[in-house]
Length: 420
Image (cartoon, rainbow, N blue to C red):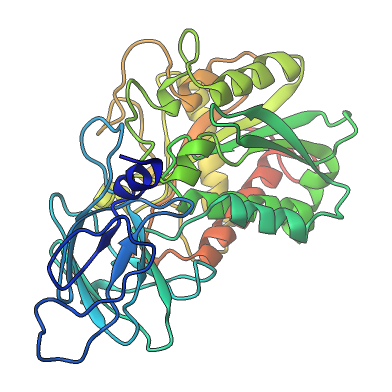
């Protein structure tokens, strides 16, 4: 079997054909739909994941129905991320039926009809159980459908291009991934080495947790250009790692529960992943003699359910650290202005629900909470699709990032408040 065939099979590429044959070797396929012999020939449907962040396994295409499932790859157990491309469906309405678990979120799938540039939620009216329908515009040569609204290296490059002339932004390399990709380390704010305090922000320890990236971008946007970020950019230096699992993000991995353990369970003993090793070295080495006011890891929770449709901080067993997290949360609740409302009562203390990991600190939040130069080390969870009744979008997720900056300024700047 040749390399091209192997690659196509990996991404689950299936062409529907008149005889129902899987034709993986043909570069161009245009055929009639098998179960409509009396109708005019239609362009055959192509469903694939052969693009950055793509993830799908297609089981069958029969008429206007596609049966498929998410590609779990090296995930232990089940997870819900998927992202695929559809071609040859212009002017048609297709049904997409997931074979196994239900990986459709609370606002239905996200859809893009312009190659992934803009996205919108299809909504719950398009969903029935594990199946959703999508009507493709007549002028749409390609559509992308995803569990959520993707945020990739291309999105980050767009942000950096918009701010490329800003002297308060510097792009460095944290490390290289095993597959040769660059893991960016961004420095923002006061960059002359005289900032009295630092903030460290990380995201995408779990590759699929995309919506948190929009809030991280909102933080950076506010620090560089927003009125609420003026004090931070003048007095604080921020160190930001947008993609801890860069390979996983770009290749469409689930990331969560990766075997033998994922990036956010790699902070005990000798770290397996280059980015985790580099972040630990950054915090305990390069910044070892500096005060880190906040080390914040940004995540998305599970697919649905009461605990997964609110914004919350995750607690650890360190009582003093958790008290400082709580103080930060109360400030955030008081100063927030955006549509995505955080409530301090939604925070998850250690020992409740899923937050009961025993033993040495293995996650970023737990590990940073016990570092001597870190005042607050914690994790925040930002839902994929809805916060209460409010639908999450890139715009309001960024606005929540602005709210986080308001809270940081209030807590960490002597002129505006006292540190928790």
